[in-house]
Length: 257
Image 1: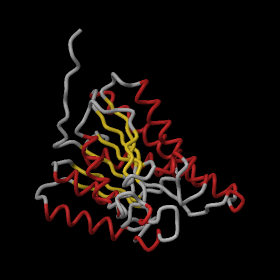
Image 2: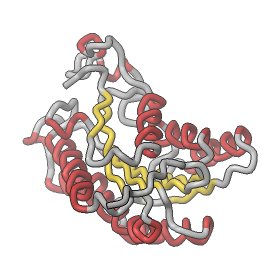
Image 3: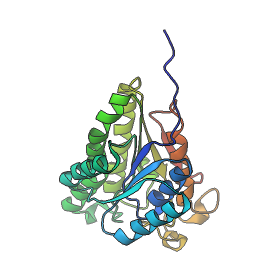
Image 4: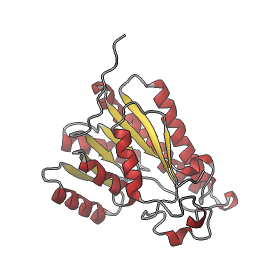
């Protein structure tokens, strides 16, 4: 039996990054741009931030093809429109999908959770990942090459400064990723998730001050500090460039379990 062709080249590929207006999404855009990846970047409400990022990238990388798109990940219609816009702008659907955008209102105790909050969290984090995957796969399967990366969390294993709603949504993402990796291993498309923990410089955790006195207090992290969005971006790029890796959940936690 002949070996499957190895193709880990990402230069010239098109990446769709949801939630690219700041934090991990913006850091991933910068790192992929370094490797010559074309970019479709989404935002929900912060249009100015993603436009500033686009201007920065176009200034740093002459000729880099980028686009920005407004999208509410809780709305199926918005996600479908997003893919139509990406194809109209770039000529095809993405080769790389980083399903990064998510939602997590910090409500630690189950008795303080409303059903509406539970449903909205699962809609934003898990349902949107499912829809994005369905939309992205036909193009990837047709060319027998694709990379799908989900932004999960250490919370998927139960460790969290947030509540059970958030943990359940992130555990669902990991299950989705591992199932697809096992079933579609020979398709040329890989499925992995990154599982960050205590990453500051993000909308959820702006600074280490926001972690003091919580289970994510930097004083209790083995490396003694919080993580940075750029460190998550390093891992996302590595996954894009490593077709032999699929079905993995990559914990970026400074040693937290």
